[in-house]
Image 1 (cartoon, rainbow, N blue to C red):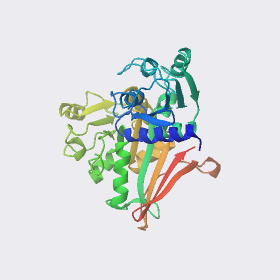
Image 2 (image 1 turned 90 degrees about the horizontal axis):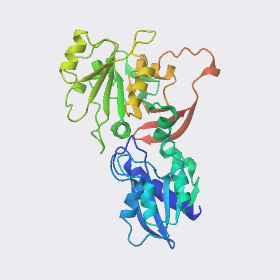
Image 3 (image 1 turned 180 degrees about the vertical axis):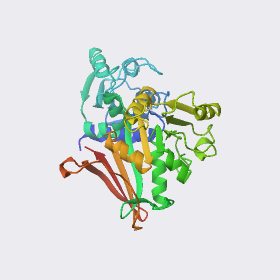
Length: 362
């Protein structure tokens, strides 16, 4: 590993500290090096706060004129919630900027590096680019497709069941696996379940076992069946809930829920008469929701996979066998193996007695 890669690794490590706090902004870390020494470093700590480059400059222990700035994502060149980072870089006379990956945001996309270059600053790109893109896979997907990055997560027995035949699912996985699930929640903008999951399990869908913000709780409830006393409809000051339905605003149930202060939106039905998930995800993206964690149940998971909406699949496999029960994924109408959904396993590890497989859909 050369010096540039070493310092970029440091920037990536810093960037990860912002996970769960900066979305829909990307995770960014910055390191300032002068005469072979790190003299400043920082990261994007929260949405709306200073960017990594500005924090690194503020944290510098000495004059940074002529120094080299390492940053995993191209510095911004537009006015957003904060001033453009390129202006601060130029004002403090940094001599060189080493960038991991180009920003896919059309408001930036090479504009930052071109502007720095025009001001006489040496710019180098592509250092650990694969790692930099991987860190911000959610941001890249959101910017490049206009859709949220969708993670499907479920816990199943060794024989592929997410619940017994009677619907009991608490708890298939271990405490360690459930803590990991809360980490996943904290890293997403929204968490999505179907109405049956709310009726059967009555989950809170909040982040309780780890530090992090609560995501928006989304219930897909085409027929508005969930009970008024459901936990997911409580404590709106701690975690907001949104219900997506095919019912219209003149429906009495729609009016009842809306009157209680819960946000409810009408989504056009698909050809099965259910909420059209593709249309719903487009609406969410337009609202700045860049990532969604789908936690169930089987019908929602199956629909997401059937419509090719999932980017990531995380399966927790518990060392239990129950035989007949509810399968994790239903009929995808695949009769030929050549049409099977292809996965790329990224991480396989133990979580207590369970095994976690973190994969990407190709």
